[in-house]
Image (cartoon, rainbow, N blue to C red; front, side, top):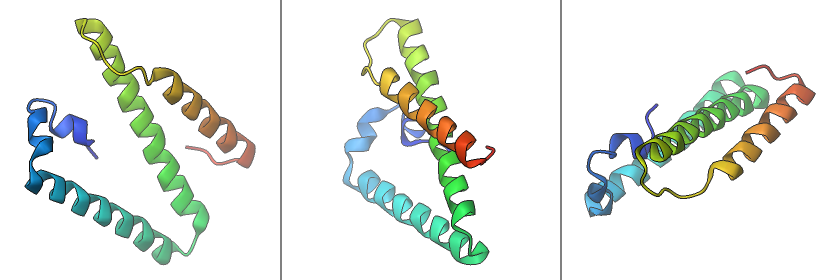
Length: 102
């Protein structure tokens, strides 16, 4: 699934439009419903947690890639790389401890 940044990277000013904001909020609601549906269908909290963790790891990887692109092209970007690396390490450590294999 593409992130908001990926979808609007060619025209970030669209993120300020009311219709786009409403659409993104609707998408967030649908994502929540999908996770809830997966939980109800499987009736397993572990599967829901596994799905969410996979999405977080994917998001972290995407942000690391975006930071690398910012660094490569020389324009200033938010400094969120350290936080992402810490979060990713924590999740991977917890998954190893809990024997959840991503």
